[in-house]
Amino acid sequence: MDWMIVDGHQDIAMALLEDENWDFARPACERHALSLADSKRGGVVLILGTVFATAGYWKDSTPADSAERQMGLYEDLLTKHAADLFRVESKGDLKLCQAGGPIGLIHLMEGADPIRSPRDLKRWARRGVRVVGPAWNTGNRYCGGWDDARGLTADGRRLIAEMRRQQVIPDVSHLKPAAFEDVLDCDDGILVASHSNAHALQPHRRNLTNEQIRAVAARDGLVGVVLYNPFLGEGPVTVETVLDHVEHMVDLVGPDHVGLGSDLDGGFPPADAPQGIDSVADLRRIGDGLAGRGLDGEAIAKILGGNWMRILRRTLPE
Ligand SMILES: [Zn+2]
Image: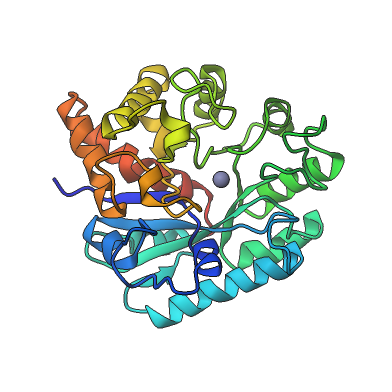
């Protein structure tokens, strides 16, 4: 069956920076599960491409400079593949993300380190950054990381308020429980966990508890299932393991609040992704597997792409 897929988390710019021999246009290989060719073949209509520039990760530049460099790499891709890839900036652009059409690209900033102040967010939003995670694993001026006691700082609360004004969605995926709670306390707006799995099935700190999954759903958001084996299970991890996480969340909150955030080029090779998923072209196997488990087509379409579309339609500018 052909599904329309939205992939809510892909570190494309990071992969380009880390492997200068990687060509986004060439089909997936041993080192990279992502390519434009495989995205098209697999029915991907929209990708959230990350800007990953957390302090200290890229030794040779500041977060702001590194983020600029990554935005430049995305510009290059958009120019080079203009017929196949375009930046989604509005609700109208979302309508163009259809099977057989060009693939839409929206930016997700993973860790708000490059944003110099809450007021600086506007500049990034105008350039297509529509989802922002306040912190990655390490903390910054907005939010504590895993190794410090802070949740959201005063600036972090201001940043969330500014996100609402600039029509940017908060991403709670890398937040520790205290920071997650602080984001919930800021307002009652929509939020996503772009790439996290169910803690009940795999008790990794990057995964969400049932209570957190319910909290995301209560805001009409979604949890994007991530295809990195350590976040999925112990021992052999297969497509069935992925289906277990999806089914668990659907049982908990229904099919409107689960999506995909594959992270298939998130700094790990295809060998660390579930057996049966060698490239993004195999994401559709999740749809086929869910059908095999008795989920109806409407629910599957939402999980594979419809839910991301709903949330972005609600949030993007006219
Ligand atoms: Zn991540």
